[in-house]
Structure formats: structure tokens, C-alpha cells
Image (cartoon, rainbow, N blue to C red):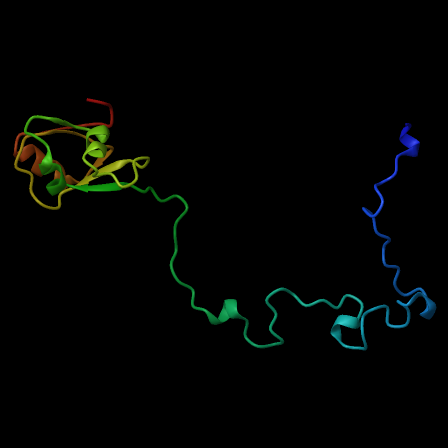
Length: 149
């Protein structure tokens, strides 16, 4: 076997339709384009979404919402949710995840001041609201960064 003798398998290739090559070819005269009209003309194509001059769907529907590309997304934890931990315990990402408080465990954690905290806890999170810091320190708790306990 030599490279110059290789051929495609029988039936795997098909001849190209040669249009506009005379009436005898079966694809002559209008060259398979039908009679007249925009689609029969040279360069005549209709853009995707064109509805014959009617207001297109993408312009009829209202614009809604905006999602900034540089937005920082956090898992939000309220102080009342942290009240399930024992007094004096260290509350970090693993402890919150074990109690089922984190919906998305891959996002950073932010602690908010919604509700009250009654126990002194050492809380480690990525971010805290100012009022959450005040409430935690008021009951004798500590605030630390995101490193493990």
C-alpha cells in the first residue's frame, strides 16, 4: 500500500452540487434559488432574528437587571445563627459548614448583625459588619481573620 493509492471508503464521499451549469445539469437557469425575491439575489441573506420589518423579539422585551463583573459575593451569616455554638468555642468556616450554615462553602463568609448573640465566641470570618463587631465584643467575644482556629 502506498500513499498515492489511498482512497476514501465507498459511499463515504459525495460529489459537490455544481449549480448554474446549464439546463441539462438539472441545476441550471435559476440555479436552485427559485424565482426572484431577496433570497434569489446576490448577497441576499436575512440576518438571524429578522422578522420581516416587525419589531424583533429582542427589542420588544424589556431590559432588566445588571450584574457587575467585579462584584464580591459573600455567604451571609447572621449573629442569631451563630447562637447554636457553645460558649467559648471557636467558630470558623469548618464549624459553620458542619452545622449546615454555609450554603456555598467556596465563597468567603461575612457576618451580619441581624439578631442577638448571647454567648462569648471566637469568630473567624472574612468580613464583619460594624454593628456585628460591636455586638460580638459587647458579650465578650473575639473577632479574628479567616485563618483556622
